[in-house]
Amino acid sequence: MILDSLRTLPGVVAAALVGPDGLTIEGHGDGGDALAAELSALRVGMDRTCRRLGAGEVTRIAFTSERIEVVAVTIADFILGAAMTRGTDTRTAQQTLARIVLELPNLPRTEGA
Image 1: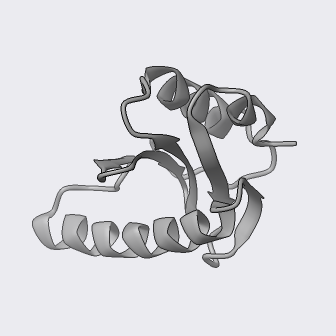
Image 2: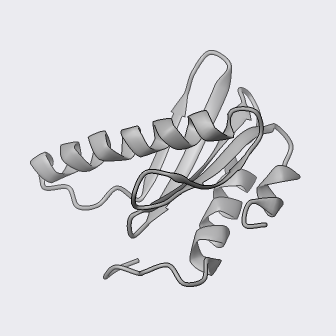
């Protein structure tokens, strides 16, 4: 459904769309639910950090671990992310995430989103 275009990208092992309540709207892969939960927690922490620094809203999160690379984008109170095998080129995933989030119907938009 929403995540279909991410499922076919090389290296994607999990993907998730998380709603404003922190619950999974859609997940993909064995780690989809875990990714959703952790993205929600990361978003809360990043929002708090940005607020304290006066840095504005978080719009993108990316990090690399020993085994995976995670890229995520946000719009309003929603977050959409993908976990990929480390070493996989993340550019296509980042472009796909940005396209999906802009095409999501019926999501409330905030100013500047």
